[in-house]
Every structure is written in structure tokens, then in C-alpha cells.
Length: 598
Image (cartoon, rainbow, N blue to C red; front, side, top):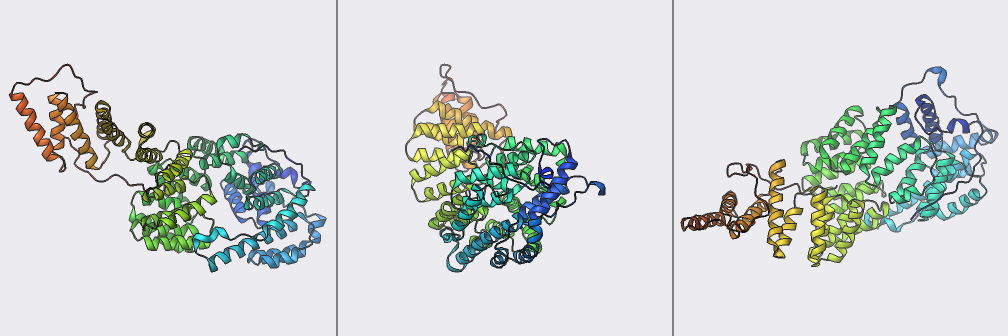
């Protein structure tokens, strides 16, 4: 799907327009800071608190302005003056979440600011009623069935204003949100692109646009304004589309031009490293971020996912207690506590906290995905399917974790065709993630499509096998097809990789590899290589007796004068470093990521 956009010119207040126009480069950071401070105030006046916070945080990361350069607030227009009393009262009601009351007193106001707050109050009132209804009457898995009844009326009114070219940048943003909520995706994209042209400093419009873009091809067809805000948008969308190298390059460029103190950029870099499974780097950046901004809650659920994967119980416990002291009723806090209980295998308690997170924000993607994982642990497959498919994927179709979780769920239900579909979707989103490829290979193997399975396992090894299982599975597949030489090559490469990088692996697979190679070399009459592998087998409980028996056979054949063959050649030999005295002393199971939040 590609959206080409033609931008409709909109009338903007003459006094404000010059200040809100943006350059395409970062040559004047003082001017950028003025723009950020101005838009932070304008968004705050309209109740767009997240956009205001984002702009303020970014402005804070830039050097302070001298008094002479501070930007005065935009002048009040005649319309603003007429609506001032109604706006001031309604904004007070809006701030305490009395949205219907705010809308009542703003009805009939003509100024752009008052009109936006009137429409936005009606929208939020509908959202609040929808959330209240779902919490009161339905379980968390049925939330998607309740709709905001105000959306259709808002769409009709905003559409008329849009056709008459009477919407400013904020009005266009709200119109786009309403269209997105009504699943009118193409129309929403067009309106959000228009909003970025009219008011490029409003981060909320860029963020909403980001949520609707599904791939890089779609991004190419968008007619975006040539502004410095576009760089932040591109960095964010690259992260969302799993184009991590491009995202990191964008963020590095932003740091180089002067945003090195931005906690937002630091957190996004940590999330990017999390997405490519560079756990050590991501943990290091998150720890630095916590020192820089100790009361920050945003992205701490992602930090907790990393601690979970590394089984860092004490650090995760400290994080959970710390966030509880800051704000125990934040969605991120509930997710962190849920991860803590999940790590302790208290899955019922974990699910309870994820449910609590969803009561606070039913549209929070991470909580739905984590909830699905917990239901999987509790063997409640129907609830897991609902959490993944009805909600996590509805919130964000780019969430590969939900597609992967669905594949795992249907694997438990022994429905390989369903598995194949969902694993394919996950693989499309993460083409270089070996876990998706191994899962696909297993599906193809169960469906007896062995050629496709071999391709998947080899591709998983080629992109960097996270769990070090692709070569073993490929070798066993070659064994099954009686392709002994190819199987031996895979086992040798598997062992070479393990010993060269010092991986801690499950000894069962290592012993399987040595057992097969010992038998393979024995059949090839390569006594030295067979003897080396048989000696390695003696180091493992499950292959010890076979290894001893093979060594006796080799000794007996040598005593009988049986000479090694020179006609049959092995695929390649074990490295000299693999002598009997350097077997790894530490063997534990590999990191099991099958039920862990990626």
C-alpha cells in the first residue's frame, strides 16, 4: 500500500507562521530551541501533553537561551479574546478530566484554539466512556469489541471543516486520529501528512503517521516536508520497521549536531539495540539513562525485558521497587512487576499485573504481548490467541512478538499450517532473526517439506544463529535423508563454532554431534578422527558407553592390522585444538527465548 499525498494549503495566523516554519538542517540550534519552546507551549494549551513533554525534553537538551533571545508568546487574536473566558474555564475542566463539561462551555466558540479543545474534549470523553465500559462490564480480552460512539459525529464535523480548509495543524491532527480510529487508514495517512506540512513542529502528528506505515516502500511514496523534524521521524520509523542500522545512524547524526544530552535519543538508541538483541549494549545504555534521569518511567518496561532475558532477578526486583515508589499506577510499572513475577515463575501473579496495566491503558501493546506469553506459560492457549491476535496485532501489526507468539501457540495445538502462516508474518517483520527462521524450518519439517526446511535452517545459520540450534537441526535433517557427508559437515561446523566462540551449550547436542562424527569417521575408516570423537563422547553421560565401545572396536581393528583408508575423504577434519583435555568444564542449557519477550 502506498499513499501519495497532495497538500491543501491552510490559513495560519500570520504572527505565528514565521516562527513555526522550520529549516531542513540543524545549522541554527538557537532557532530550533525557540521553535521547540514555542510548540511546547502551544501543545500544552491544547491538552496535548505527550507532545508538549517531548518538545520540552528536547529543548532542555539544548543550551539555554539568553534573556534577549527568549521568544515572547504569540499575540492574541480577536477571536481568542472573545473566547478567552470560555476557553480558560473549559481548560480547567479539561485538566481535571471533566471532558463533557469542558465541551459544553466551548460549544459555539470560533477561535481555532477553543474549537480544537472543544472537539478534542468530545473525542476524549468518548474514549473515557469506552474504557470505563470495558473495565466495568468485560474482561480484558474483550476490550476490542467496545467502540467510541463519538467518532462518527466528529468525523462528519471535521470533514466539513477540512473541505472548507478551516482546519489548522492541530485540527488536522485530530481529524487524522479520528480517521485512524475508524480504520480509514489511507485517508488518515493523507491527513497526517498534510498536518506535518502545515505544522511540522507537532511531534504527535509525526508519531501517528509512524504508526500507520507498514514498510519502507510505503514510506518512499509519502510527500513529507523538508524539515529538521523529519530526521527525528525517520529515526523513529526506522526503529519501528526494524531497520536498526539506519535508525542508529540517524540517531548518531542527531547526537553529532547537538542533541547529545537528549534522554529521548538515548532511550531510543537503547531500544534499537534491544531490537537487534545486543543485550549487553542495551543494558549498558539503559543503566546510563537511569543515572541521567533516575525518575524516568518511559521505556523501563523494555529495560525489564532485558533483565528478564538475562535472569537478573535482583536488578529486576530493584527496578520494580524503585518504579513503585515513583508511580505504582503507571502501565510501565505494572509491566515491570509482571516481568519480575514471571521470572520467578509466578505466572498467575504476573498475569494479574499485566491485566492491571491493561486496565490503565487498554491500547498498550507491550502488556498485551506479555499477557499472551503468560497465558502460554499457564497452557491457556485460547486466552493467549485472543491476547496476541485480537489485541496486540490490532494495536500494531508490526509487532513481530505477537505473530511469533501466535505461531508458538498453534504449535502447541499441533496445527502446523496455522504455525506456518504466523511464523511467516513474524519472519517478514524480522527477516534476519534466526529464531523466526528456525521456527519456520521446524514447521516445514512437520509438513514434510524438507527442502524448504533445509533452506530455513541454513539461512538461520547464515544470519547469525542466536540459539546455536540451526546447524544441529540441519544436520539431523541430512541424517534423515541419509546425506551423511552433509550431516557430518554441519556437525563439524557446529562444534567448531562452539569451541571458537566459547559458547555455553546444552551438552546433549554436543554429545549428539560427537557421536555422529565418531560413527561417520569409523565408517570412513579414518581411525584417528574416529578415535578423537569417541574420546569426546566419553565425556558425556549419554554417549559414554557408545564412545568406549567404539574405541574398543578401533583398537581391535588396528591390532588386526586394518589400515586407514586413503580413498575415502572426510568433508573436513576437526581442528587440532579439540583434544581430549579441553572439553568445556561448564555446561548448562542455552538461553531459552521461546517464551521470553523479545
